[in-house]
Length: 302
Image (tube, rainbow, N blue to C red; front, top):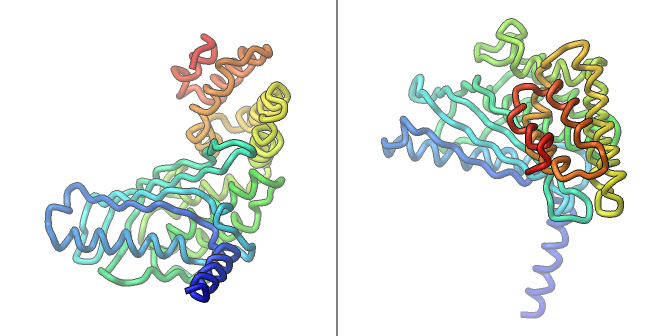
């Protein structure tokens, strides 16, 4: 019995040292299809396959402990069954990171992509080939995994996510001749192509630095000096004004505020340092679509 316990503890230690990068919750829904038992079996199998793919693939060369894994969520909403093995719908992706010395999780990325089309057979593994467009579902999932990891690494070190944004860029390049939508610049200015193009352009370097200064320099130090932390976070937000002046309402800046608007309201509404109105005046210009939320900052209420 003691031997079994020792072996189990050794196993746990090994798993803890060699944990994969993501702790991803996966849901697949198909409101118009799941009344059919055969479709329900496919949905359940797909959910399991996506879960295994994103959580058990080794995405980086870094070692993660269990508590260091990136918390994220993937929701696939199947709206149409094009054929026996082809589906169309949307995918929503979100990720967060912990704030030092607290139980709070700060959201980094939150996006709903309406251009999901893929083939899937029940009880099959999802196979990703980084050098070519082999499976669209694998490419979409890998693309967003690298985007989430990239923003996570950016939040801990200046432009630390570059290797992962480069991998996402490679996937987009591989998919330029894909039949499925969402990969090409001609299909609109708010898709996977523009998401990664913007992330890697020099114009958007202030946004990437904002992820670091807002979270690592600002938020992670709030426990020791809240006033200084809020000032740092305001300056991080202020740096986005340069992007706004060059490209108002840009896709990536809007995604930043999609993830952060509630958090910004909760941080700065009760602020008594004199920053509250400065934050309000800045933020309604950068993110006018959420002005009704930001009015709480002006009023000083959450």
